[in-house]
Image (tube, rainbow, N blue to C red):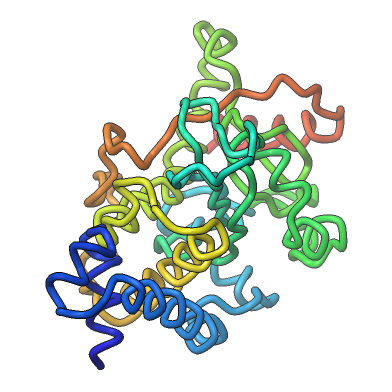
Length: 302
């Protein structure tokens, strides 16, 4: 119990090891050892229960939630990356130096309609783009390249099968399995494209809300994590497991059922831990454009 109390103090306040050692009257090296051990144990115990590998039923429930709560059909998740500030490792060059001018590791996450993490990928270099990290992840190899997400199905009221999709921002490329918004310059005089962007942004922002809740609850994310990169990665993984644990057990039903479009706690974009995207100008395939056009026409007619 003492170990858990010390670890939760570290995670929820972001205090340094030195400060916590004074508070608990233990050595700094003891605090460091406890943090390393507890975050590994939390992952080992909670990950199979609260962050398991998604199944077909997981994707079906996510798709149902995005349709009922956010009015976006055929959507199985919202994806985004979050830069977690760290102390720059020695002799690491510019690998961890992100475009926001500080060293970081990236938490790439797929989130369900109730702000729970479905899949996370932690530890990529800060200099890498969200799209690049996604395409090198084990999730991509297993569920996208391996085609283990649900098969295509028609949009409500139509008869043309459309792939199930993830929703991302301009930091991701447009693919048949991943929808991104139209560039702002193209929607000025196009009501249909503007409406599509609004519907996509409304459903996609659940991942930003999840990052905001994570940051405000575990305030270690509001300052650089001053530990080794491997330990920082384990801390982020443990925090994601605890986030899902809290969302399942400790949040009121009234808050989880808040689907009226109002912002959730911790979604203030001025929060230092929440960073904007780096747009990608990759050319999408014709099939990806066709899938997006199906969604555009569907939203225009409904």
